[in-house]
Length: 409
Image (cartoon, rainbow, N blue to C red):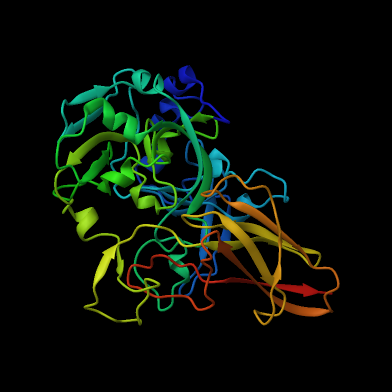
């Protein structure tokens, strides 16, 4: 594969290791933004309430992150961190990669030498694998966007509860590890297996349900579904799931289990809270319903739709990133008149069907005055974006056409 992770560096936790995280008492205790060294404020332009959020460098291995919550950590990536020239690599730097945990009791240290990944349930033989054993298996690298199901929730109107993300609860990386199916093969699949359940080291409070997500067996054995120990050529940071993280390209981040330490093969559907009740979307074509609607049928959230974003607009040029969801980016179109007419943007190199792809559009020749720009993408399946935003009570799957305003003096 194109990239690899130094096995010794991974085992040693690399440069973003346990020591740094273990010495971070302020965020671990849930101190406020001021005590955490917030540097400046950014306005996310949310639908209701204040969109002002502090930027912080206080979390180990992170810098210039938008602080949504200190415990459990919710750190959003500023859109400027995604910006780059057309030929630039569209991966998100590790120190700017967004962070999202459900429970406050996340692993603050991991003994890499003692760690074991347990594979059990409906298997022919239960196995327990060390990091060294996993890293000795055939290595693969997949470039893929990791996007929170609630990315852009703060833009929903009417407002819905939950983390009020702007557009930055996402990141694109080269994930290095081993195929999930190769790990399953070490244990062997017993007759009747239908799902593969994955859980991690984070711990729920009290009687709350342990966070776990499941994939259908055939999906779990897909070529591109991997268990990663590396990100962009380095070891996974603890905040992003060290020592192992499930990577499910094309699907929302809720399935990308962090600090993975348990794989269980099931002979029936997973009826646990995080599959049967949480992360449910309306069973409609676009996952949308009328605001205030209740009693509608739901299904678990799964694949991502295509989206395009602005990362920079000037009177001379507009540029940004696009993703095809669970398919590649075929084209990006930009409107200079609020959606009345569209023209095709220039595209940067293709880094695979699950990756961001850069786009750019020269704006020379615009008349003086204000202009409303819009951007949309179409994936290789022919799926595109709709102008009108959807609404659902979870604030999930926003994928409507993004707009920006530029003024030519």
